[in-house]
Image (cartoon, rainbow, N blue to C red; front, side, top):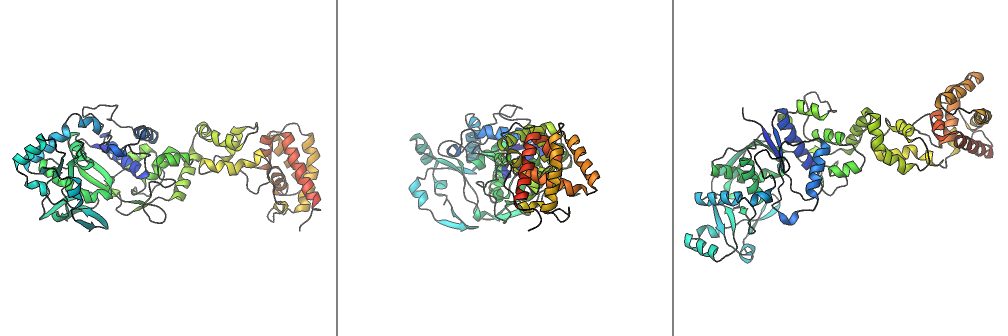
Length: 490
């Protein structure tokens, strides 16, 4: 069997969009599922669009996502260089372009901007496209030679037929046939000597023995031109897998400039890399058992590209948040604390036990920025509505809460051990002595020390972290509030 070889071939033009990361992930999974090779190739032929530092972003993203490549710019597997601008210097693209010229499958074009601007345009699938009229195809060898010797600027164009059809095969969409009249004579080599994305792609995939090519279905319209290039060279075409569109919740194409459209955006938003990868794996693919939580190793074992859907995949942020929360719950505590610590310190400036607070929120948050709303009361007792002391289920009201707090205050003032266990024992003793329900006591105490209806921990756990003086101050504040209102229900 032929060894599976896939490549992720990004252009270094900025942050890695989730669509690009999905492509990289699927390429990685296809190769690793079959014990093959996954390659990184940097496609920087469009020099005007390059962004400084973007290659570092690509490398950092792949590393954080766990997508280790077998070959790449820093791992030569015998098919380098792995950066297209470096490959240009070897003359490989010009060599193959001239081979096509010799075969009559390509030709020199010397048309200037003015002439090109005069060509007619057509609307294809809602886009205005200018079709080249093959003017330079009719140039004689003498004219071409004279133009080249005179240093006249040129491009090299693919010579596509204008009649008949071209068919190519995609693993998801099957055979796709287009009329050759729709195929423009696309540029293969630009006037600066660099290859176009489309031509370099074909040459590199063949010379690097790539067997499977994964890309977005927006490239389906370009695929017939690729097919014609493979046929012209007499090369075997790779297996094509065109992925469905990724949309937002409103079924619109997920914008690259969206607030959560890149891997780095999501990390900055408090998501963890493993959850992002897991979520992205399911944007268009599903296992046989509809399971949703996978480690990368499990994805490698289960991934079958034949189960990729052709329907658009919805980037559901609610689902991603849920999935991230599941990862946080399952995470080793020390690893969780390392990631949570900056958020804890941002929310709390006091000298409190942040590890205990982290343990309180670990199973309650979905993303790290959620931490602040759960723990802000530790920093400062918020202003709260005294009606919070009224709880029908706990059978508490203002008057009963005031009595509980007044009864407990001297006991808590005399208590030296402010550990959770000791405080719980003290409050439980009061419950047993008075014969009331547990919640009848715990609710007013928790309300007084937190000022919130929902907290990440119980009354005694909160008091342990706050310490004796702060806990007593807050209980006294609650008593004063209730006394000022005269107790009882409104």
